[in-house]
Image 1 (tube, helix red, strand yellow):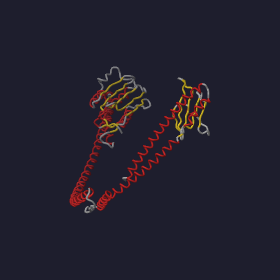
Image 2 (image 1 turned 180 degrees about the vertical axis):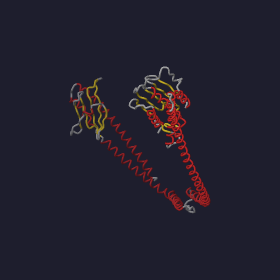
Image 3 (image 1 turned 60 degrees about the vertical axis):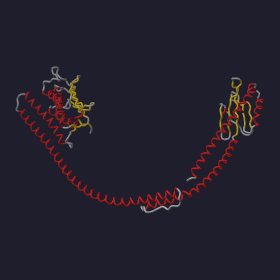
Amino acid sequence: MMVLPSAIALLLACIAFIGYALIAARSQLAGEIQSVADIVGINSAAAIVFMDPEAARETLSALGAGSRVQGAWLIQPDGRLFAEYRREKTGTFSFDRFLSPGTYRTKEHMIVSRPILAGDDQVGTIVVSAGLDDLYHSLRRYGIIVGSVMLAALALAFGLSTRLERLISHPLLNLMETAARVSSSGDYSARAQRESDDELGQLTDNINEMLCQIEERDVALQGVNEELEDRVEERTEELEREVQIRAGTEQQLRASLAEKDVMLKEIHHRVKNNLQVISSLLSLQSSHVENDHARKALTTSQNRLRSIALVHEMFYQSEDLARIDLASYLASATSYLLSAYGVDPQDVHVKVDCSPMHVAIDTAVPLGLIAHELMSNALKYAFPEHRGGEVRIALHPHGSSVRLIVDDDGVGLPSDVRWDRPRSLGLQLVHSLTRQIKGNISLTGGSGSCFIVDIPGRYFDLGD
């Protein structure tokens, strides 16, 4: 463990050294070749201008004095070879991809391309290629030196670590064995053996003293645990008795709640039956009344009672006794009114559009009566003389409110009817019930009539 970090550090340092040497050698070689290319290019400019290849080849042959340059080529501006020098005559050299000025590297060569200028005009390009054998030879020499240094350093580090192991590792291993024995058996009476008088010996004495204190506390802790277990057992018995008592109380509450549910359903059922009895009495009474106005008033009252009875009927049929589904209620109320007024569904089409929402009985009754009155007025007066048309009842969230819309494409309200100050009982009832649930009512123009009632959204439970 001690030798490994040293070996890694040395290896990284050697890699960095070799990398730096490689970069520096490449940069130096590139600079030398660029200088050579510039000098040869200046000396060859006149030969290119006067089209003297022999003079150019003589100038290039001077490059043979250096061992690094493998070849040089003078290229005319149109890309044709003007003169060349190659240390080795074997093979061919493709210089087309080196015409742009710059430095290029291949696996075995470094190639420099420089422009040849005559005054301000470029009269050609010189390409010089140098071998990398000397560079690789230097790198191998560096590698041998680095490897030798690493081996010597690792040998020295290994010798020092072996000496330190006898002084440090062996006492530490003794402490580790004692700790493992205590951890596996839980026997805090075990003690480590002191082997020296240095800091490790003092550490051994401190650990033995700590084990002695832990042993004393362990004995005391066992007594506390036994006492705690007795208390937990007693408390568990008390909790079991409390759970039994609470279970009995919960069972009684559930029975009482079920009894109240049955009672509420019975109340709604009886209210609905009583309203039906009253409706039947009004129906019987209207059959003995000869005055048409009185008979219509009794029939209208009978329909209103039926609307209220329908609310109670839906409450006792619902699983949730606290609220009813308004979409189902409006559909049932519409079906009843079509039958009560003898409206042919083929002539007058009634469309019910209601978002999923529920409402409590305190809001269901006035809202049901409002919808009942507005639908009744549309069915009775909007389509005289068997005129066809459509009545739409919509109930949707609208901002922080819920909007009820009852509109038709019938003849509309008579010009002498003041809807905001009505004289008829039906519209008066609509205004009164709207104020009761803190709502607002309005009438829009256009063909037929369109009543809009906005009711605060806090009365509704939106959703499924």
